[in-house]
Image 1: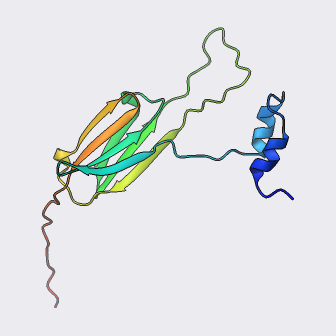
Image 2 (image 1 turned 45 degrees about the vertical axis):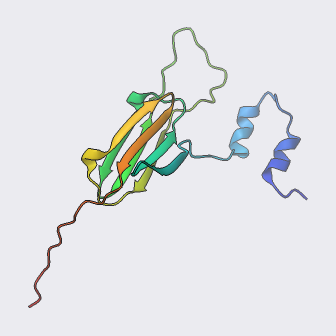
Length: 137
């Protein structure tokens, strides 16, 4: 009869007084908020990532074992004086993405954050790995 959950949701009138109670029964689709484009330009790799609603201080970037890790977290605000919330839809969660970039020189990784968009520039050249051989007895 109904092929998709969206068809059922269309039957529920918007503005229904207990909408928030129904949200628990009909969960919405979660989507990763950190959409990105990866491209090559001027001999470097670039990761351009949208992180809407976050400030520069909320974003952390790390490089570990060939992985570039980007995370954004914002603490939930306490109820401000005089505000009595009827409904709160804006959540404060932590988002993260990891990219395998290989053995690169982490000193040449640059990042800029402007208007909710993070741009990370990485060197294209791979760092020499010092191979050590183990003798077999």
